[in-house]
Each structure stands twice: as structure tokens, then as C-alpha cells.
Image 1 (cartoon, rainbow, N blue to C red):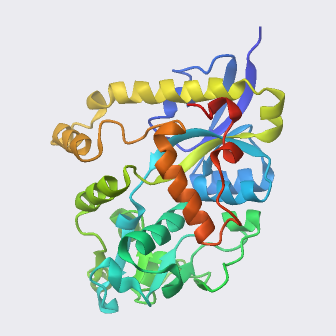
Image 2 (cartoon, one colour):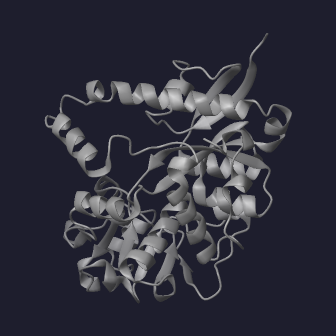
Length: 336
């Protein structure tokens, strides 16, 4: 019997790649992979529904589903980050700790993206800084944003602004036009010191940038101990017309994702780059701080995380009500 051929778009992820490159197979399915940056993937899938199986922003997925978008998710969450630890501030802002962000100008790539959703929720619930007491600045234009595909409008009562088209998060932070910004890596800051208007930012400006959480591991340990999970970034979805026609693919794809992650975990210790001399020690530290598997799949293992992210989405005015797992995930995976 011939296998069902499905287009599959995703960024590279070591926990998913064995499924994308064919090392691991989903029974009865032949996946045709396309590697793509998440920002492009989500925009293409939300706007054009090009692929049968796709990586998807958790926040944009919740918004799209609340609007009746025809897709169903798998409880597969291989991408997780401590988004609050990716915030950097300008020393002239007077910020020294998370509680100081009240009344400040905070830049994010996109207001509705999962990173911004978690940042707002964590600042409010863990550090007492209301989303309504921050001036939010968004980098992406409406045309190229996920919100452009879901009809995003700023929630009532939010101070919402857009960064000028000829500027970026990096240039506005370095120029002290923003007090704090979500920049995922110091390398991004250093690599983008030439902004879109070709204005070179001097080294003295760079020296004034500080991470909001100087000890990322300490904050990660605090968050994990308090919440019992790490914030999820993305999931994977099946286009609705394909799922209805072939409902069996949900369980088979989920099983494939599980096998791919297991293979990646099995090879993890051997895949540490030799240049990371203390890699084995860092791996041991990671396991001590957040457990042997920071990337659990399934509904049951992620109940606390799903309750939190869906409540944040509703609380922040992105979805009209708190979405339930049975509305979001394939029926064949609800008991997993």
C-alpha cells in the first residue's frame, strides 16, 4: 500500500530532525520536508495554508483557533525558552530588576507572538508588573507579521506603538529610544549594530546594554521550581482538511515525533561539540536544575503549561475565552 505523502515545514530542531530527514518514519506517511525560519513559516501557513503539516507559534495558533481556523495541533512541544531571560535593558533607563519595568518602554518583535505572551504573563504573575503599566513597542510591520494574517488589533487599554520602519529593536535599544527589548541573544545585538537606516551605532552605546537577568541559570531554576515546566514556544499542526480525510495520521505523526525526540536524547551526550570543553558538566547541571527531559510531549505531562498559556492568552485579550485542550489538539492524542 503506498504511503500518504505530506508536505512538512519546520525550522531545524535536533529533536525533530530525525523525522524530517527520514531517519525516523511515521508509519504510513512520507514526509516531504521544507526547512524554514519560524517567522516565515508561521506567516506562510497562517496566510496561505501551504503545507499539510507545519510548525506553528503556540500563541498564534491559540488566536487562529479561537477565530475558527481550520487546523488541529499535536501535543508536541520541542521548542522551549526562558523568554524573560532574553530581555536586555539600557542602563540609562534606571532599570536594575524586573519590578522596575513598570512605566517603561519595552520592545518585542511582535505583540501576539509566543515570546511576548510569556514575557507579559511572567512579568505580571511572577514579578507584579502589569501588562497595562508597560508601553509596548512592536518591530514587525503589519504586512509581514503573524498578526497581519490573524487580524490582530491591540487589546483595549494597552499602550501599543510600532517601531519606525527604518529602525529595529536593536537600534532603538542601543539609541535609548527603548528602555528594554526582547533580543534573544547577545550575538544578535552585536551582529546588528548597523540598522536599516544604515546608522552605525557606536561601541559606547553597546557598553550600556545589560541583561535583565544576569544569571540565566538561576532564573531558569527559579521558574522551573515554581511552575514545573519550561515555557513552550511552538507546536506542530495538521491542516484541517487533511486531518478530516486521514484522521489516523494524528497518532502516527505524534508517534514519529516521540521516536525522533528519543533518538536525539539518546545521542545528546555524544553530540556535544568538542570545543565546548565543559559540555558534559553543563549537561549534568541542566539535568540537575530542570530534569532529564525538559521537552515532554503529550497532554498529561503538559497540563500545567497548557493551563498557563491558555489563561495568559485570554487574560491578555488575545483570545475571547480560555481555550480547552479538546478544542486544540487531535482527538487521537487527548489521552496521551
